[in-house]
Length: 295
Image 1 (cartoon, rainbow, N blue to C red):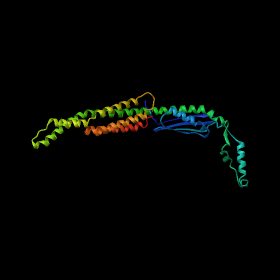
Image 2: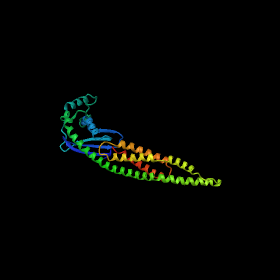
Image 3: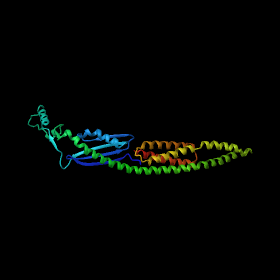
């Protein structure tokens, strides 16, 4: 069964005094493209998170975001007094810093690099790795479920478009012999009208020769057979259970379907067939739009 490229999944958990949420968004893209957005303290996990994404998804623009905030227990943090003291020493060396009207903003100092750190910062990534992986699995499971649901809807629409094309194609195929017979009748009538003043009669071999040329020029049997084959192959891929991405293949087949439809339109000038081909090309265009969202 085909799967959509768009999807969304999120998972949350309290980890070490932090409320952590992991969110995965997937959008349409010709290739696989991942964006990882994590807090500074978890940047060491970026590479393995991207690897997890590439093993789970083959196409799409993927955005993975991790957010963390203080939970009810509060984060376990400490102030590095040595670092803060060095900042204060450097500030005192600034000319005019000792003036009575100069005040040091302690809150601002706490935001400087290295002043505030979580306890056990060196092993924070190790402690967070397993919970983050669990959150990833939960969010990815939700995203894949959404992709599957959308995939079933796309599958239904693609089958409907293929059935519509097949119906119009069958009518066009059946109409070709009728079109040739009509051409032969009209040709004979025109030739008789032109020869009537001269008293000459229409020779049957002349009529048959012109009809044969017309039939050869208007023969769409080969194009109809190829287009029918493309429709059958397309339907098989849409229903395939292999789990492999087929979006690019479906897009290529849709292009080939449009090529055959254009050839039929250029070869067969009958009004009824032309109307059917217009409907077929419209259905193919809708198929091309839909397969852009298939993984």
